[in-house]
Length: 338
Ligand code: NAD
Ligand code: UFG
Image (cartoon, rainbow, N blue to C red; front, side):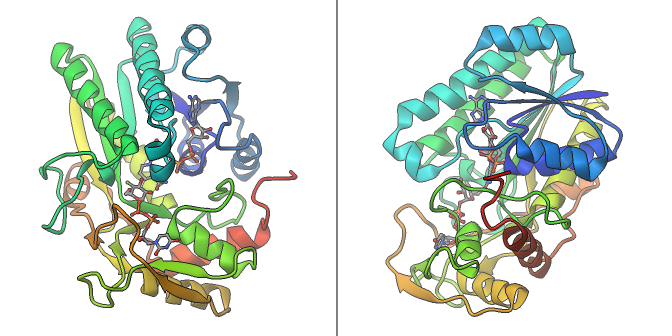
């Protein structure tokens, strides 16, 4: 079975590509490399001993996508491509709407034209907006709190409408909680450009000595130690969730939606402690003001994915930090310079 992976040079996709290739799928990658490097594809090929067909295409270029579909005729698509920085999306909403919405519309139109109607979509826990009741299950209300989140919600809505109009589509919407960690080999991992926005990549840069200290955004939340609590999930567990989703699509389930999380919350301070253990160094930190838009606690109810996909996360926070550190210490400059 041939899978087209959009955004296939990126962080979550590169880990998914390893699992797809190891499971015997053929992988075609489409990426414009706006937030990634072709080196990740080479590393996945090295890790698996298998080849990836790579197209440097921007999803905004519908004609290029059309030509690629005509040539490759994929059986299914895993759609990771998109811009994902919340703060940047508030500054440049049009860029986010253009890239994520128009890009996805182009993709869906081309899929429809070539009758490729099996799709796994990278959604996010961000579509739950602010929730007070934890854990969050798939029936919780949906809302957007920033332009990035709005693109995820709008794409989900588009997919629900498309399915309503034509139930020959099979669509799995996967709502990720907080992916962290790296492949156990240390060959692939997260390679953020500039100063990281997210907690674990930031801690990793402090551990390697590139940044001075972690800024903890608030210690007055309604949580056990006062710092924000999130549902961190190992990126390899997340990748394996995509394999299960592809298997599910082959059973013609229609449109299905799953949380991919562990169901467990960890605080910022717990993460720092765990990372210290993993890297054997002290991670300096300061308590700063809350980051606007953050909530105190977010964690999933992942039981639907367990029941219907036979998937559950098995890697704990210690392994997430150990694997993140292995990647960071083996590749202090990420993929740059390779
Ligand atoms: P990433 O930036 O590493 O990967 C996204 C990839 O898409 C990049 O390689 C980028 O170059 C590519 N891309 C972006 N716009 C494109 C376009 N117009 N045409 C072609 N390629 C394009 O991000 P990631 O963390 O691997 O995230 C993958 C997906 O998962 C994204 O859709 C993201 O919104 C979603 N997601 C991520 C998280 C997270 O915390 N990492 C959480 C929830 C959901
Ligand atoms: N935090 C800090 N210091 C930092 C960065 C983060 O204290 O330098 C704290 C935040 O306040 C929060 C926790 O660490 O309590 C996690 O923050 P992240 O930025 O790593 O992750 P978020 O939960 O804010 O958001 C991420 C993505 C969203 C996505 C969400 C759920 O950025 O797009 O996970 O998938 F919606």
